[in-house]
Image 1: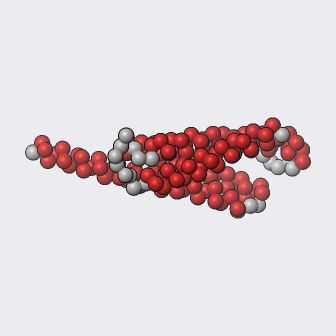
Image 2: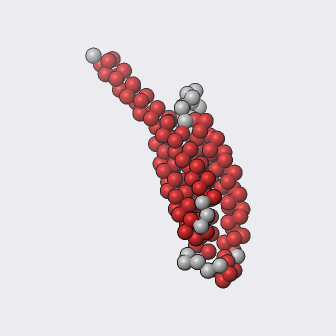
Image 3: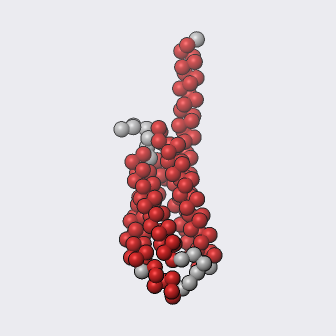
Length: 148
């Protein structure tokens, strides 16, 4: 295990815990909604069938669980900084798609909070990535000084 205390560790860890809880709740609610989506298609018709929306929510929930478990596991590992940064970018893209859908279909800006956690995760991963790059540069200059 690493003895480092990376600058984005706490931010990644806390957001990962919150996303883990949220992802679990979303999976528990998405499965029954997906099973009853034909009812919602008949009652509230929209230009995207509800079954597709709930399937998207289920996929997103699975991704949230994967990202949060990875964040908890690798929040203090400098070698995984790029991996966590990539996960953060993907989660921000998912959050923007979800926000656009909510604004267009539901006319609701309330779920803008759903964009906050992925952005905080991304900020923490960015701090770790920057730290990793700085440490890599320091190691390169130290090796060059040894060779002289």
